[in-house]
Image 1 (cartoon, rainbow, N blue to C red):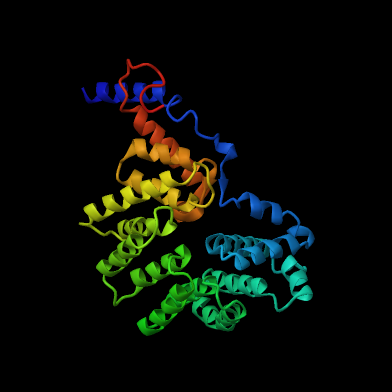
Image 2 (cartoon, rainbow, N blue to C red):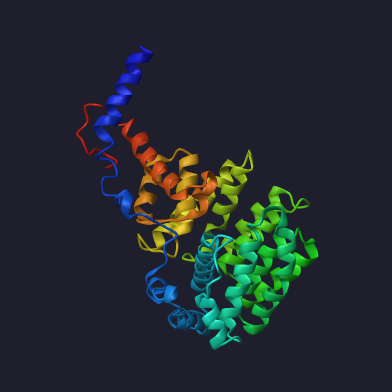
Length: 342
C-alpha cells in the first residue's frame, strides 16, 4: 500500500504540475534585485562614467522626501559598486569609477556622501573578522552623510546598521533611533535596522523585538511597508529556532497579505516584503497563498530571504517549483488538468 500511495502521488504531480502556476513568468525572465524603471534608466551610463542621471535621481528623492526609494536606490548602487570592485583581482590596475568622476565634479554633493557611507558600512560587513575595525573606520563617512543632508533618515539607517555590527551599547542605539524617527517616523529601512539591532542585542529578549515590530505596524497607514515589520520579525524568529509564537506569526502573515494586496502585482517597491512573505507562507505550508504571492512577485526575486544557500535566484526558482509540486500532489489524479490552483 505505501508503494501504491507513492505511485499515485507521483502520478498526480506529473499530471498537474505543468498546469499549476503556468501563468508565472518563465525562469529565465526572473531577475534578482533588479532596479525599478527609474533607476534602471538612470544607471545605464555608469560603466562609461556618466553619473549625472543617477545624481539627478538621488537629488530628486532627497528634495521630494521620497525616502523609501532613496534608501533602495542607494543600497542598489552601493551593491553594484562593491560587486564591480570585487571582480578586480589584486593584480588589476585600479580603474576610475563613476564615483571618482562624480567626486571630481562635486565632492560636497550630499547624495555622493550618502553613497560613500553606504559603501563603507556595507563593504565592512563583508570582511569577516575584520569587519569591526572597518565599521569603526566608517564612522566619519556616516557622520558626513548625516550632516550633508540634515533631514534625510537614510544616514541614520546606515548608522543603526553600523551600531549593530559594533555591538554598540543600548544607550547609543536609543540615541540613533531617536534621530531616525525625528526625520521620518515610519521609514521602513530604519525600522528594519532597529529591529535587527534589538534581535541581536544580548540584553533584549525576543519578546521585545516582536513587540517593537507589532507596535510600529499599528501606527502606520495600510500601504506602508512598515506593516511588514511583524512579518520580518516572525521570519527571523523562526530562523533562530523560536517556538510558541504561532498566533503572532499568523497575524503577521495576514497583515502582510493585506499589504501585498494594497500594492499592484509586479510592483518593485514591495518586492522584498513579498519574497519574505512567500518564504514564511512556505514555512507555514500555506501552499495556495504562496503560489499567489509568487504571482504578485512576478520577475522581482530579492536576495533576502533566499540567500542562505549562496545562490538566491536558484533557491527562489526551486522554491517556486516546489510550491507547484506540492499543490499538484493534492489534486485528484482524475481531476481536469489545470484544476483549482492553476
